[in-house]
Length: 465
Image 1 (cartoon, rainbow, N blue to C red):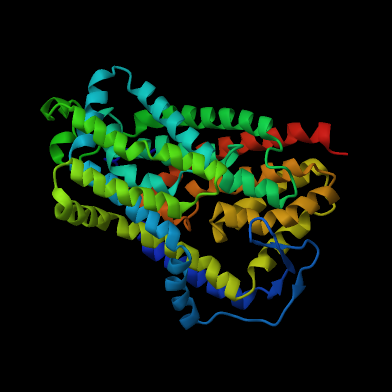
Image 2 (image 1 turned 30 degrees about the horizontal axis):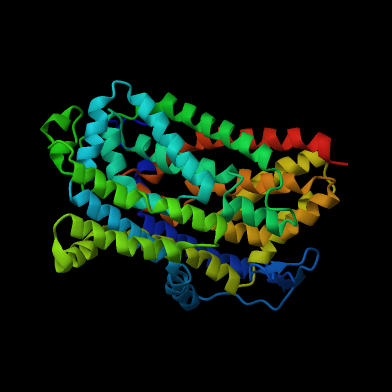
């Protein structure tokens, strides 16, 4: 991490997240003119409704380069395609922003800070909570709404905004990458690789524990270099910002506890729904539509006041929601230009004929590159695993290793990729530049990736034949 009071570096003067994403759309447009158009044949999966690629069927097709007007139109199309995520950010984010504006979160957080004499223990505890949420249901976009209170918590502990991001989105991403019950990564990857949903669960559980522990250790090693800044975090009044300022905050009340419970408890049935009833973002949005209005009512705002306050609380979430949709436009352009399959084919072809261990290791950077252009963990798995699974057979690798390579190289890129709309939204909310975050996150992510590669290599000798 870099001291906030140091002179800004070139990495701290990077373009606005909106401009980064629009640049990604333009680069995708250029690729449709440079790469040969090609497609894999596909077949429908009866259970999921997804179109799965058939390995070995890539063939060239008539070029269909995307022009400037089509690229611009891809932006609203991407927002429409990501409408479920856009809505969940607005509804969940609005509910937590409304809860924050009641003052309940600040009072409860400062009560927690005032009771602890070991701030690093709080960092570890919060990292474990978010790491577990990530492992269970791929918690990621939902964290956008929590950034304001996480900033207040980190500041109260004597640390800066990078620590707030590290113990939340960082830990959740690492947990989600390897979590054996994560339906959006592990579940879809196993299914499309032709494996039972629980295949390799024991190994992945061990990797989850080790990887999250490594990330926490990296975070703790850097907290001293992430000092409290003078810049107030979003939505937080200045009287709650300085360390020790909790004495000036009103004491937490029982109603504060009820308000927090009202916002947090609904995640429990949602996780159960994801794991057992095929719930998705629409169900989460519906739950928090009710939660947001209920928070307003319990705060004494009345029906009209609750509706108005909930809508106002959504306003800061609008940019974050749009970033997610604009990021989808990149894959829209590549799909229109019929070059996504070409990218997968070109990156997977060199792996053929290599030794099992070398091929397994090189699968990781292949997935890292692909995740930049396909930033959805489920979309990435659906596109690549029907190819990587049979490719693993040719390379004399167990298919579990191919799935682990995807998990090691793909989902972890959510905290590094400039095309990750939710990440850019969180960085903007925390007022942390992409350059500063990358300088912190890359070493930690490389350590986590090393854990995944070691797990893959350990699995190969006993399973490959």
